[in-house]
Image (tube, rainbow, N blue to C red; front, side):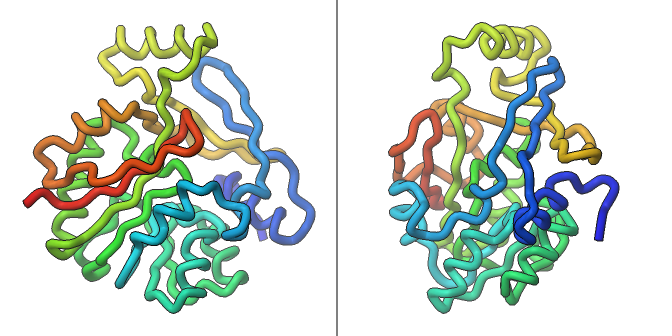
Length: 241
């Protein structure tokens, strides 16, 4: 089973089948980084303490956006919670199916709406604040998520502060972004795996201050910060009263 434009999903499927190799992430300035596919399959005991603490705030009906191989969704399912995992990768959804995730759906973050129902908790863990892509789309989606959740709804998000580096390759990229009117941590990347290349897409890394600015006028605010593994951090968002 192969999908020509699903490098990410093929990497997950091969890892699940015990024959995986490294995931390559290419940035549009030519920078190449490598990720361990085993990270997408970590069990609860392997999670960082900030994620373990944050996940305790997940209650009721849960929507896991960008569920990948299902590590967070499957844990919540094992705790008898009603969870739906969505991902844009067909093979990621196939892996979730093979791993036993009951409710999963092939769907982009931009297609998530009240048509899916109402959710008490929305997950954007696994650094998935990045799926917002840019500031404008983030505000649009956060307002949509407001309509998809009850008054006590919660969003659990993880991001990476792009400024906690002195690497000249990254600082030059940040400066080039600012010259183009983009946030410093707005990346243009694609995933490569073996001979497969995914399409280019934008991925957004923000500081805590930038996250607060994006949340302005969306109905959401930061309620709690879980900061155990900088430059990554996890926050709990709740609705403004």
